[in-house]
Image 1 (tube, helix red, strand yellow):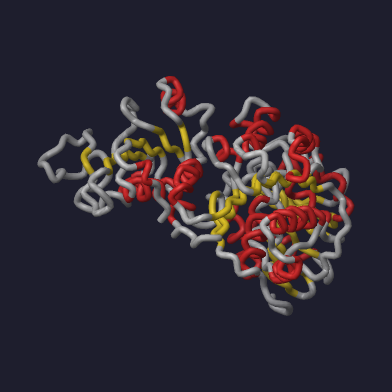
Image 2 (cartoon, rainbow, N blue to C red):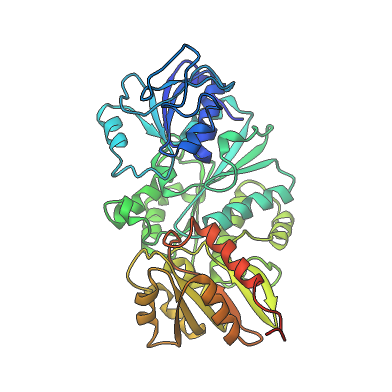
Length: 462
């Protein structure tokens, strides 16, 4: 795992014990830090306290003897004597509060308490930044933006691997970065960075920083769109001016950030919208949005010294990511595409534009009241099938433009779309909504789509 000598002897509070939080606790303990950790989920707490010492409160006796049910006690697991599972009520004496990206900094009382006490509120990416001095010589690529981050991150990682360059992928994708083994000298860490992760980072100086786009999203966590855009801009504020910036300028907010960095000269690459590219040799990178993702990845790879031959090989060999324009089946000449990761209208719009005749499954937990971003591609939609909480509202919006079925559930939408689709057409799950009204997350929604497609009767079956 990745650790820093600077953590030894320090005291950290860790809030959240999902994947990144659990990796953070283990890395801090391995470095000799003292950690008090908490998660509202008892199962996550229990993962750090094997029986009979379950959880941080109650459930048995500590190694020191009987403990009241409401009292925390040291964790006896072999991960380190420095760990205690306990509610984080008093932050006195802590060097930092480490929170998971899902913790809302604008409303969580513990974050407010830490700020009032002058205690830094950070995340695992900031810990990685602190550990860089202890790692073999390397470079870091950071990718942020509202849409396309995961695909671009995975594409850059794939291009580097194709070129034989040691590389790891982490951040908001794959394994937590602190849980991975350090790269040898000359390696490149490729990090997908959500705005939440950037908010929790103070000192990450990326050798290459990439901003793809900024459109309204996650506004419940910010004081308006301007604050959300400012969060993205912080990735470049942390960067040394001689390091490379790659920015898509297809929206006003991103273009403004690019203009603010104009003094960087040759260290700033702008990705203009609408560039025509021959994408026929890149089967997993179809559509205008993937042309932009590819251009950003190409620019980043070039700044890292990757040859044009290896870049071309990487683009051709990239297989894409699950739930991002993923072709899951072809039945009777109809293609079924899982784009469950499209959780807002801006990310759905390019998916609609990528296919000429679409049966569109849309809906879920809405992030807004309209589908305006998708309107330019309405002509591609043969029929829409609405699901979830947004179903009735979206049906009313779409009805003047196309036939609409209020399917309600994803399974019903798949059956209805499959019954109406004709050879050469596409059944597309691109919900333009979050998934939490009906599913655990977008991945569970995509898996349910695949299962529903697989459950369809074969041709000729009753």
